[in-house]
Image (cartoon, rainbow, N blue to C red; front, top):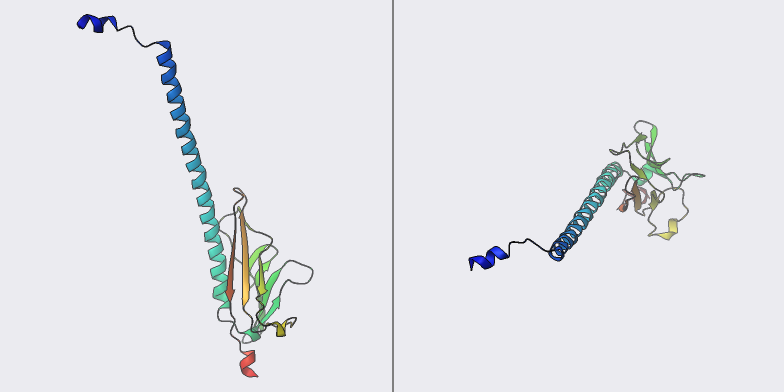
Length: 181
């Protein structure tokens, strides 16, 4: 029996070697494709998370500013004539001043101050606007706001990845005009 084992110590054949290399290559290619797909997915998810964070920052800041406003304090610019600027002109009667909150020249503005984005590759896109959500058509065309809610549409894009996100929020201003009449 020992002689049979000794006689079979010639090594592997060329066919066995080719089969082993082919199987290893197939397993390697499958493993690399899985790793690359996982890496691309991770980058996509990170870009979406960054866009969501930026959108949340802008929306929260806008809603925080608009939450306590009264209809009589706001004059809408949907859009400003001859531009694609959508903003609300807010009158502060106590300070006898006005400020703008909205989207002006591709930037998010609150009280005439730009909201600085934390990532330079993130930009506001076309479609970003503030508009009156028409529920009562009797006041349509009125230069002042009616008691309709305001809809904020925010479209952000990430330049380096091409990812884009669109969020919408609706807020109702305090209707002090109807209660005065």
